[in-house]
Image (cartoon, rainbow, N blue to C red; front, side, top):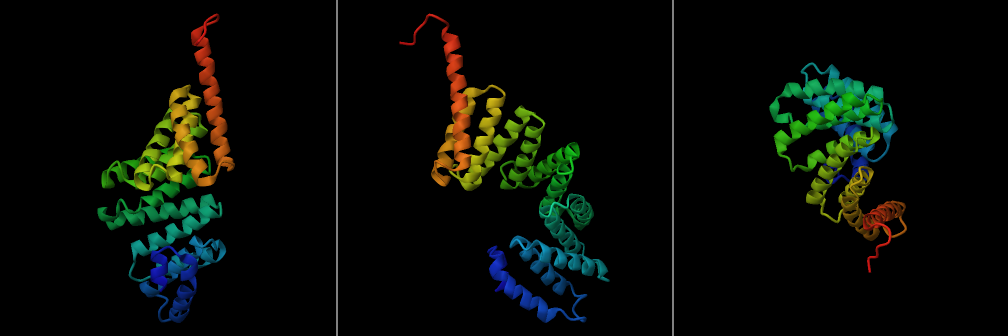
Length: 275
């Protein structure tokens, strides 16, 4: 049952079964068995996904120690253990510790062979996030651009796997007021989200809102109005007219339309009428 629940990402339901399985197998004879370590890794991961970060950290630290002690090295098992513990540290805002774990995990993953190349890019994405939160923005940007290249080569330019990379890059560009680059990245993230989850999805609406904000920042007001109308419609239907995000988009849209009206009035000149 634990396997069924974890496959369906019902981690809370999986926890009692995983705990029971680990308790049965947690003997001195089995602690150096890869299967037991994998069970322990699954329990630690399920705890982290269920929001129980403290216990998850303790279990995953133990997993790393056991995987490191295996007489027959298992690089994939150790890489996964380091990576999942790094994810927990990211949630706990322990960014420098997470960075160290991802830097250990990545070479192990790379050593397995090209067949794993595309599947392990999450570790590099998270390394970029750890660096970004420590203000090493250029290093983070370089890593995310590298991941975009690898994923595009492995899965094509239309893969949904690129969404987190474009979002991370866009947020970085926005922070540094590189609005045109941010707009391009948000646009790609929105395109891929619409293709994967539907044009009416919350993801697509969010990226449209961000794209409209970027267009407004660089004076592309008509383009801003178009995507903001689309985003406002999605948010209003999904979250309601009085949701803070909906109200933010409506306020931004109102300011864009006000600027468009001012431009139109300036273009008609004094003493003319539109009637």
